[in-house]
Length: 564
Image (cartoon, rainbow, N blue to C red; front, side, top):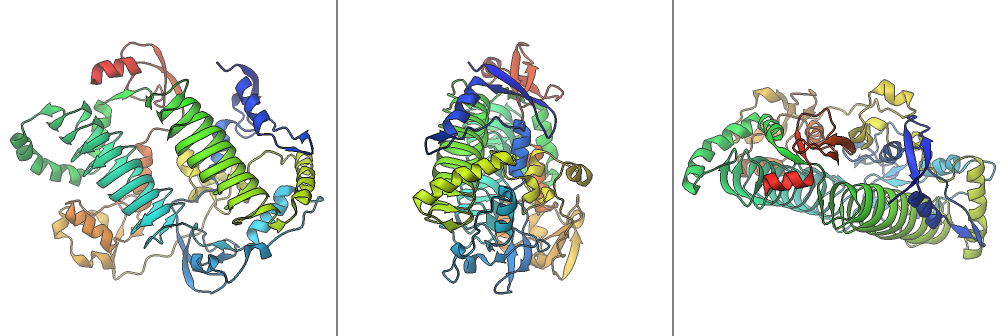
């Protein structure tokens, strides 16, 4: 049992947060030592929410822009808007052997702060137009993803094929407009589900197939407008039918429901029983969507991990790590990390660094060790600000840098949001904490005012004038822009997308992809823990459903008694 040893006030939002004895043990373990002197990691100055918000302000997952390659001057697609004064190379040229990132380095200046020097290096070193991805084929419009094939507008995902307009997916085939899910095939609008086939508009479900507008299904098939079912088939609104009755009733119903879009799903969510926290085979853990985890506190959506805290969206095997988001496999002693992949040990204050050991304050460095304040290095060791040193020089200089950071109050703070190459309203931070322009600027965030040019099309059509029946949609829709019914922003349909809609009898979307993404975020629970009472037995529970929400929320025992 953790013991609170200190109560601190967040310097950003002024809320109170606790420091426990286990926290102090962790900070002591990850404190680096040089020449027999340990440089202790101090306790955080920001609360967990503000630390997460600061990390997410460095990540743009949903916005792509047209701009010029800084070297070839060709038109390219980039995750960096053209109004930013960055050196952006076409990703193919950036990844070629025609230039060397080690030519871009800085000598250490102890009269300047660490972050002042780092941001100069960031803005004066060429960066790829899109995140460098590996083992991908015909999937140019993607970011932070790996092993993609024929994918389009997808982010933070792994091993997907023919997947579009989705984020945080693992192992999917023919999947569109989905989020936070694994092992899907022929699915559309899926949220937080796994092992589903031919499902449309399904949330929090597993091992199910041919289901539509349903919530919390386990091992179900051929269910429509259902919720909280286990091992059921041929059900409509939780009523059991014979196969023939189901097929007769469902044929017309499916069409009517798809034309109504989100309304039926919202009704289902109001009828449903919700479990307080979704944890399977976990020990001494708190938060949501955890499997086979031990001592994971305030953690979300990962499995097979131990001794983690304030972390979310990992795959598996993360150990003794705090304050991270998007970790795939094998993280040990990590702290304040935004995106790392396989085999990372003592990885602290880093962004998109894969397969590393003993790296600090680095961005996009791979297969390396003993780096401090570096960018875009591969297979390197003992470098500072991208400059190569000997082992002895590195171990002499790093303590001096740390001492200077302690003096300037930079030590053990994540990269400030103000230095991010992305502005707040184009980052994942907007999903976590929605701010308007005035509030964002007042909180020292940057705000993007650049507007994308309108797509070049023959004609624009209002979304509400589109036929609901996909068979009535002509192929020349590919040459038109659709005006979103919510944002009025125009968007286009691509061939792969149209073929999917026709094959599955799905109407053309009436909302811009960014609005559809927000719709899915709104249907997902917030990444916060609340205290409330079980609506069945009235015991105190912890849950991601706030006390002022209308849904039924049961403790684990009451939920199991009701559903199983």
